[in-house]
Structures are given as structure tokens and as C-alpha cells.
Amino acid sequence: MELKSSYKVRFNDCDPLGHLNNSSYIDYMLNAREDHLSQYYQLSLPAFHRQGLAWVVRSHEIQYIRPAFYNETVSIVSRLLELTEGHLLVEMLMYDEQLQSPKAVLWTNFTCVDPQTGKRKAHTPAFMELAGTMDVHPEDHQAGLAERVKQLQAQARAHAA
Image (cartoon, rainbow, N blue to C red):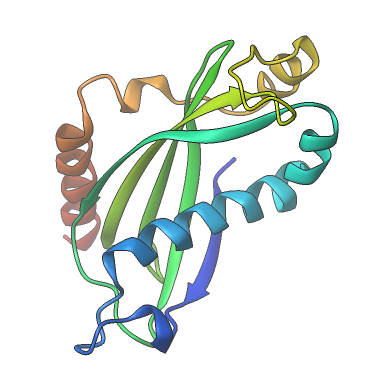
């Protein structure tokens, strides 16, 4: 199942030239991931927090491919690339509205923590069982982000032909 949603690029998220600010790409994509979890899996981050699970960002790796502009509608797709006992690697892709032209790729590594202590912890067996029902795409990150960008650009060229 492809998790996707659309967003309109807002004026206050843009630079004076009407380009989406670099940091706003991350905000849009993280917000989309939260929306996807809610919409497609009926998962709530506050509910996990109450169960003693939270995630902090350990790292972001992002590649900007094409600019997103003020008032443009963009589509964002998110996917789970890796799941272990203590972390998640999530890919978020921003495209044009028709999902034809990639604009940015974000890989975010989340570490599981106890919200009471802020210390690392292992995912609970219940969470691992739930996460095991989600599509995981490990093949797309083995060669690295630069290769992933090349793959996405080749797909876009093939679709345009």
C-alpha cells in the first residue's frame, strides 16, 4: 500500500523567491508521515506516548532534487525502509502533484525512547507485531541515498517518455 497525501506550499514556508525553504521540506515530510500513520494505520503518536513509547530523530539525510514553489500542490509518499528493536528508518518522498517529478528525498532514522526518562529502549513486542504488518522496503536504501535519487530520476524519465 502506498501512503501518500497532498499539501499546498504556503507563503510563510517560502523564501523571497517563492521556493520552499530547505528546513520546511523536513517539516512537510514529517507532518505527512504522522498523517499517514493516522490515516492508513489509525496510529496516534500521543497514544504511543501514553503506552511508554516515543521516537526521537537520530539523523536526517536529505537530497533536494527540484524546487517546490509557493502555492504549488505537492504529493508526499512515506515508507518504512528498516525496522529493528530500537530504531526505524523512514523514507519520505516529495513529488509534484501528479507524482511524476521528484522534488526531494528524506531518510529519517528514529530511535525509540522511553518518554518518561528520555533514554533509549527497545520497541515493545506489541509494537514490533504491529510494525510487522506494514510494508517494509529494505532494498531501496542498501546502496545509499545518492543511488536512490538516481533511481527516482530514472523512473521519472521513463514515465515522461
